[in-house]
Length: 97
Image (cartoon, rainbow, N blue to C red; front, side, top):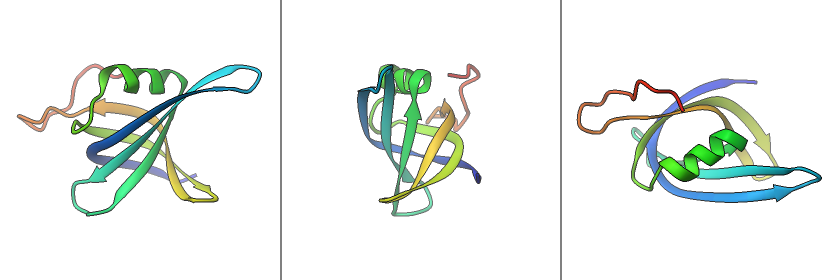
């Protein structure tokens, strides 16, 4: 898999619970990139999805480390690590999520 690091602003967050014998939390984020007009779809699972749902809002800048994944609808990024970026100074939060 290809690793990517993406910096962008959250446009929309969709949170879902999926029951396939076991309950999983999934969050889909539409992320607007800083240097492009395009938006990228990010998928977060379980603990990362729960933290995204509780601590992040639309318009917040975040840094994502993840892997590219091919789906029927196109390419999606499967997030492994998500971190807030302070808008005032451009610094990252010291606590990992």
